[in-house]
Image (cartoon, rainbow, N blue to C red; front, side, top):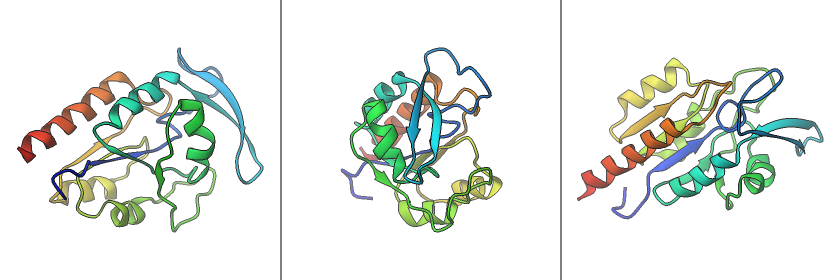
Length: 169
């Protein structure tokens, strides 16, 4: 990794930015009705604080969408959260609603040997094995899917970034 390159922050949507809830979302979230590129209409709960937090983290990380929403994330969700355009991982395995999306192969190809933080509510044992076997610093965060990203996660991400900065100096 070049000395001035930022670590990557991989960002999932469902269960991270949009809690998976049956009826009411946690406090601070607002419901949005959006139409995906497939034409399907989705009800999504979003918290404007997430946009603020991610904008702050953007100073420390290269933010990359790593979600089954793929290109719909920056097109539909980014503006609602006040986020600028961000890179998107387009998965080789096509996302199917209701089935786990196997992301690891495409994540590995995208991040290479760059330090990475990955926040996803559905990280499997294979992802954990990969993270512990990497030479590059790697942080996995798994929020509870009904709650999503919170201040503690943001603190952990900031601490990870500070550790990486200290290692460079």
